Image (cartoon, rainbow, N blue to C red):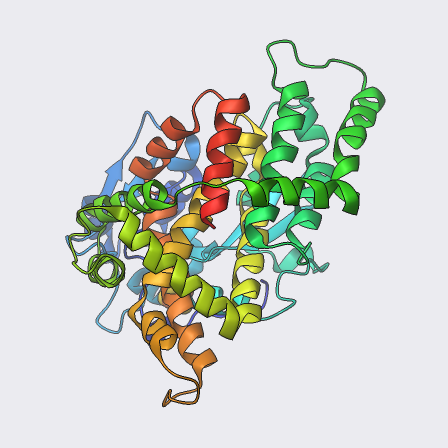
Length: 420
Ligand code: SF4
């Protein structure tokens, strides 16, 4: 994370497209003072959208151009404000992106956003890329703007956030089970913890008692026999994947209409066109689902270890880049993760390069299949991370789908896990 280098004009995209750039109260002042008296002063004033009612971290936004890119980019796609005035005038996200800095209770963590294609390559294509290692605090970008761990101080999840996250990461690493089962384990874990700590009468005890209860609830998820039993039960569950495919496709189609930039719309049309047989992706989703399932079978038979690595690293990235305490319940967090994985699975299976790989006979491909797959995967992961995952309309839809929590949400999480 600390060694990351932006590709700048060599990047296939630019981070300003499709993202919102908030300017914090402190940075707004720094920016205005930094350009004062220079030819940029007037431009900065006219290109800032004030947000006086917003939180201090979002007192203004940069007014993006009609193509979604930042108006301060120069002809070489480099930041003109950075070039003329230095890093100090830039809003926090421009300095930290694609890193995200979190202040945990006793330490600081720097995680990565897959919305940057270069970061996606670094995090997804390397086997041990997500191993957490200590680093020098003085190299953390904009340490003073690090986000605090969300949630109420004293809440069981906030106090034991590391314990719960470590259990979730251990489950993700259980590669002897398919990804679908590991997502189901996470759903079950969340359901059991929420039943105690997010019920109408949550368990209340002192810190040691709460820890004891958390440890007791986590314990079966470290027991191989208990996991195997849950896995076998899950295997017996039969769920048609058509409705899941239909829902993911309509979410992608809606984003394709609203997303800025030139890349995402054509990408969605190619992906859906390849699975549905037409870019509109209309009609019975069962056929698309059957095609999706057949491609996955073929992909796992030929490139299983590589695909497994993308999704393992993706899952870990999610737990590191967004603390689970940012959502009202652990199950809501897991459900959102499952939906994201389902979206990426559909996007990857629908990618035309993956379709061609699946259709090719052994030894027929002109290029090394893993290189083709890596390129397709990076395109899927970074475009979906950038244009779908944080989009306000998608977040609202996911909240609505999540429902009230408990058994209802667990049921939905299991249905989408099965799709994965
Ligand atoms: S997306 Fe990543 S590599 Fe590309 S310009 Fe932005 S930070 Fe640099």
